[in-house]
Length: 80
Image (cartoon, rainbow, N blue to C red; front, side, top):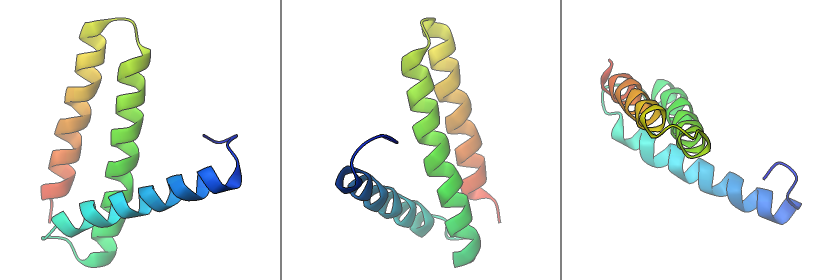
């Protein structure tokens, strides 16, 4: 994606911002600025975890990556 043309990167950027906005909207306990920061991290962590879970060859490790990311993101979203 980093080497894609500018139109493709712009579409990916727009989709990322939309995902962040949706996630931030779900973080009711945080103020909007803090929710946005948490949402950027959560979206990045989800994308990274999914990417790595697909890359590794060990299915147990793949599952562990996904479960750890899910737990960490859930805790982050519920913090005040």
